[in-house]
Image 1: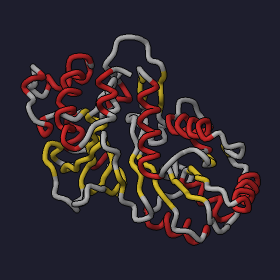
Image 2: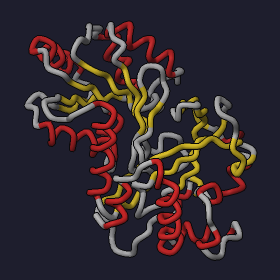
Image 3: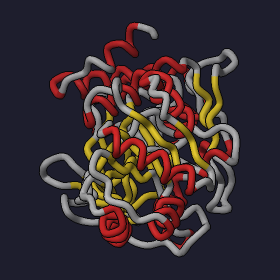
Image 4: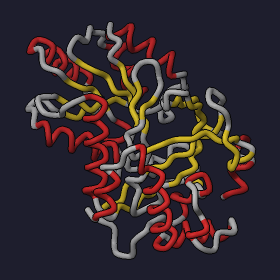
Length: 326
């Protein structure tokens, strides 16, 4: 990793804004797509931006049509989205995979504690059935680091998974189950079991497999089936290199190098008040060689303590101000 990347992971609240401005200038000068977008907004020189509030956020849909990168050489890795929404597939060109690993390992340990002596189970059929999933890469790397012989991925082998969980419970060993929502619900219906030593981390929606339900409904069904409150959510996406985590209350915590803000769906340049619903914008400084300032298609709200909620996604009819940016 270069010096700027190393400083990003050492960032404190006091120098976050300073780093944002430094990263913005770097990306303006080295990311042709982002530079052109900024110029269309009237920013002809990066030094004209003196505050983080003035930094433009790139609409996330650009990752579906453009190579959003701040480097010229061939990427070390390409992550791609599932394209389940029918609007095309996002591609994230990664220059230095070590930055992604530093980001997700640090974020996980910041929230959950040490990775060593922990078992990881991946119930991720929709991700495992395609190439280029950044989530599969992350869970696979967690497994490699923990080196637990009971680690494993599962497609639809629910019988094998329940045997593995039963074994871990008998051993009294801590474990995590990373699971996509529809697969967790299917597993919970077929094999309800009390989880004493395990934590569930759900990683997203139904991926077109089931009717979408709210997070609170999902948590309720899973907590009843598994007789546990140890249910968490991971908020990440192909276009980012960082993740936020939430406990069963559904309120996400960002790592120090990541921040969110909420803007009006009809005016993507106007912030909304805390506890009010709007569109989520993300600063992900780990996205150093891509774009660190992303306007998502997710609806959410922020809270006074810095945590945030994800409430759903904009549909095409909602893309008023945001579509003008694209």
